[in-house]
Image (tube, rainbow, N blue to C red; front, side, top):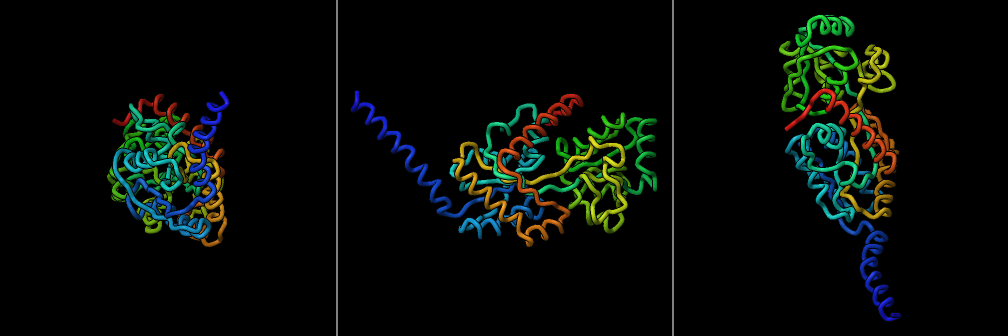
Length: 324
């Protein structure tokens, strides 16, 4: 019996030894960060801005790889889920990939509550509602009244069915008691182009991608999300100030890995994110994108995602939003 116990102890030590050593010596080689969207977008820029400082803190190279494709960034997100949980493959998560996409899918490809190790919510960005020239100089309240009186005649564009902008439009409909006509596009830019051209009336979008159209005054901001007004749009009220606090969704960009990463490795990665977002250089670069550094801890980030996912699911079910 004593020999059997000793054999079991030796076997357990053999299994746990390499894992513990790996955690203690982490990182020993370059780390890959998967971005489930094309180069040049906000998720990609956030990854590259933060990875530079994280690499200095960790003493290794961080390689950003773009893996776009699938509904809502599912191709790259699945690559994160299926990676070895050793901390050497991480990925950027968004309110779309871990919120609206799984909430609107009839058969979700992954479970945000079980399939990820949460490291930190890196940064958040305001979303906005803007009008094109077809709305003239109508105020937000006048547009709401028009939509109430003539259901389905006021249109809004978004970067895709089931994305955060689409579901933000659904939130707006619930909050205002209106019915709008949703016009989905393959990305924000073509949607913005048609709103600016007068083919579509309104758009819900992230502030960063809308910025060139706002600066050229091709679209007119009506409300922004967040607790305070945006510095570059001081005359534009928040959704809360406009009497629609439940509409004010924030876009966010976080760092995750596959489920099962050792807690010590997660903590090490979180500390590297903290060092990055605390630096003046990173904060300044994020602010130029109208993006605010967050740097929440792993538990707070997990709780945020789970809470938001439940709310998105309830909204999708109540509005019958399903993306095949």
